[in-house]
Image (cartoon, rainbow, N blue to C red; front, side, top):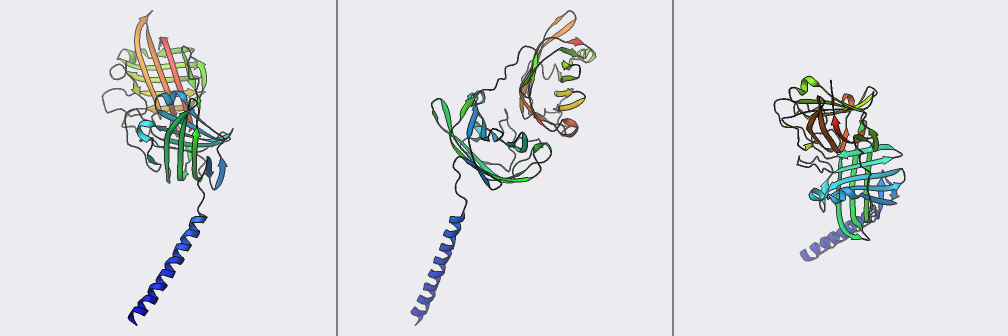
Length: 336
């Protein structure tokens, strides 16, 4: 009798387990299907129509990828081979500070409107995801074009202010295939500034004479009477060096570097490397080089070069938009 009693309950247990397994299999069938070269944004699945990668950045082992859903809608993803390739990237966390930057970035735009941007750079106010992972792997090269697998899973993000539309969005996507190489025309003609892809000639350059006498450089680079870039630096800490614009400086005596851009009385961007002024932003990417070359007719001659600048300043520190900037100037600076 004891055997029959336990046998009966064992049989009931097996039936219950089978029902549970059946229920699980039904749930599995209801799971969302794996995406195949498509994006699922806020529950809507859209095919990926094109994928590109920046050739110049690729040569430096940085992956700047553009995923197109249409001519006016798509994603931009930045990762670095050294820090991200072949790894499952946690999109909910800022990354630790490191030399050379190379932090992950994910942005989504539609009809020229920024829906959201997320960026892992430490010390900046850009948001990260509430949930989600990213995986990027270069698989091969075919016909001179790189082949990648890119997968973003379980993304949830909300970006406000200048970082997005203020709404919560869900996103997943998977792409496996070739990425068309493209090359940005970032060539700067002599003595010009490229701001957001538009090249503008430098029409004048000035420097504060009193501060120059103390080896402090307060320089104004003019694109017109009402548009200019202001750069502040010192001989002791900055001259002849490649300055990383993505970092606050270590505390020291004297000036810290600063890069500002103004147009028609409006502050477009205002960055400052003073570690005690954390409210001021720094760049997301970029370097600055300046060197006093000579003096001609009583005026100092400088070379100034700002490369690969990307920056966003909000409230009193900018217009809330992301800007790219390059600058090159070699010549005399009029004394103020």
